[in-house]
Length: 156
Image (cartoon, rainbow, N blue to C red):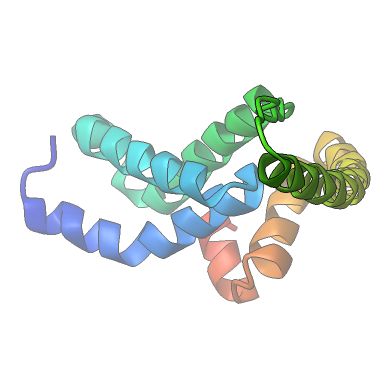
């Protein structure tokens, strides 16, 4: 455990936004990113005494990234359901509006899914070729981190 809460609070304040942004970038879900960030810092708190203090930023980033990728893998397919019980014309109109909205959402989701699949193919190939390049691109271009800070975080 951390010897002082102040030390943990300093680490938390320094890296919380970076870890939240990384978790969101990799998971695609803000609520999941919040949970991942919380879990990442909890793991840090529980295992702090046994880890190398020099690499905390790298450890936080890697832990959050892996948790987010696991989340994305588990939640890649969601089922959409519509309540089909209605009794009146008003309920029918509401239902038809839901269907139209669902169709529009479906098309929007399909386009987004296609973009994500292309993005995933490109980045999967990059990760397979050189994971450090992949991490550098994510940090600098997606998370808008200055190159010097990304290099420091990656231990370069």
